[in-house]
Amino acid sequence: MIVTSPEGSIVRRGSTWRRWEPHIHTPGTILYDQFGGPKAWDEYLSRIEQATPAVQALGVTDYWTLDRYTDMLAHKAAGRLAGVALIFANVELRLAIRTASGAPLNAHLLISPDDPEHVARAESFLAQLTFDAYGEHFCCTRDDLMRLGRAHQTGPQTDEHALVVGAEQFKVSPSDISEALKASTWAQENILIAVAGASNDGTSGLQKDGSMTALRREIERVAHAVFSASPADQAFWLGHGTLSKEQIIQTYDALKPCLHGSDAHTLDRVCTPDLDRLMWIKGDPTFESLRQACIEPELRAYVGADPADGALPYKVIDTIELTGAPWCQTPRIELNPGLVGIIGARGSGKTALADLIATGAQSTASRENERSFLHRASDLLADLEIKLTWGDGTITTGGLAPPENGDGDEPRVQYLSQQFVERLCSSEGGINDELLAEIERVIFDEHSAEARAGAATFTELRDMRATRSRLSQRRSREALGELLEQIAEQRRKQAELPGLKTRRTAGAKAIADDRWRCSAAAPRAERNGLTRSCARSTSASSSSTRQHGASRPSTSCATTSQTFAAGAPRMSSPSCDSDTATPACDLRTGLRSSRSSPATSTRSSSGSSGRPARALSS
Image (cartoon, rainbow, N blue to C red):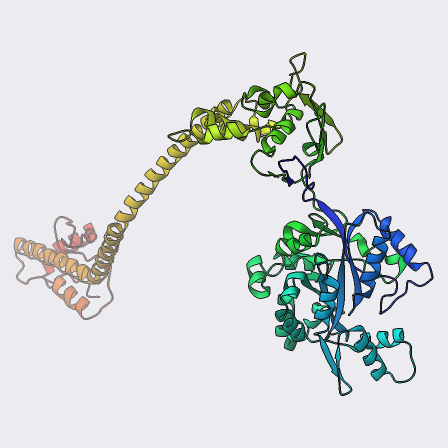
């Protein structure tokens, strides 16, 4: 963000990624001081000054006190750490809770240096934290820590040794910290709370004990940030892990940034965290940027070797520089690589700055717009030259006059001036042709060369895609019509199916009935057929007898009928007395008996002896 004033002054470059060291101990730290040597401070400060990338913010850490923080401020005032813009106190506390490893849980108070009296106010806040032991009540002050050390370890000892012992024994409960914060408006406005997230001395070490779940969540809920460099922890606290963003906010009150520092207790560790996990915060090197990182952790806090990538360097304007402009109080302006906003009072030069940047990027919009700054102030801009330096180091220039050959480089920006936007937005009755053309141009420019498929304008590309779309739509309609016809035919067949099934069932039943009648009627039909055949034979025989003058009727068929009825074995076709072989048929079944043989007929006819023939009586 660039802030302008009526005098044309520029306040700052804007939000960029800067390296921080929010957790770093110093020579003389109360616990585990391994710096040593009479020149420890000089070597320590040199390592910070020579760190790469450069450190611009330091969180000077010590246990329970701000003593080493005030030492660092004194070195800064003496001329050291010129590149470090922010130094703030990080007071490390030990909570009266032990993790699974047996270590006490660590918490941190990050104190804003913006209040000139912040040291005294912070020490007053710490004095509200207490610890009871040996029948005494101890406050978190230097004197009471030494008194606790002497009460815990009897015998002669120096003040520094007593301070170390007392600091090791002093523990504070999370509820005491919460109560002290509630009682102090100053603390609420100037202190951020961070809790360690590691498994040895952080909240992760409480996860295995289910009875500690409620307490662990309450501690993490109160914390503004978590000290951890673990990628899994970073993902979790941003809502990209096992819990969603909504679940993190519901359970822990807010998304939280992960902070990390070298936690140096030796010279070799100064500004060299493990695995090259550096701390980056997007914003000016101020405590307010740290507050903002707690509000927008995903956008403003990052742990890793390099901050998150932005736009490609050749698309980023790094600086703008004016020559031949004695009227400009700030001829060189630095821009940040992200979204740049120019804000200021009316008439402070916002539009003028935007016009100059566009012109330096080879845009002709300002020259062609009669209401632009270049046109209205042309009498003062005859010698003006605008030079832009881009992120990749290339330089473009521009001025009031167009290039002499009339064929300059292609514009590197698309400039929509304030007047152009106002004209487009002020059209009555909706979108006018100019606005529509601009929308189409923007859309077309966003397509790659491959996606344009040889089209030179948005209209050509639209027609090409519309033609393909119409053909595809027509084929789809045809295919849909065929499917509808098939569906209709299928439904018609399904509607006829119950009737067909009924007819098939009735036909199968009729066939079964016919088969049963045939099988039941076959024996009776055979008997009826034999009886009729025999009757005919008997009649023929009687006729023959009368012709020959025989006096007794033939009993051949009667005997045969009686024999069959009595259950005698069925013989082949009966022979009947007839001059002519006549087939015996049953009219109902269509069964047909065999023809009478000539021999049988002859024997029947030669019954002159008066004895009837017995064809079936044997």
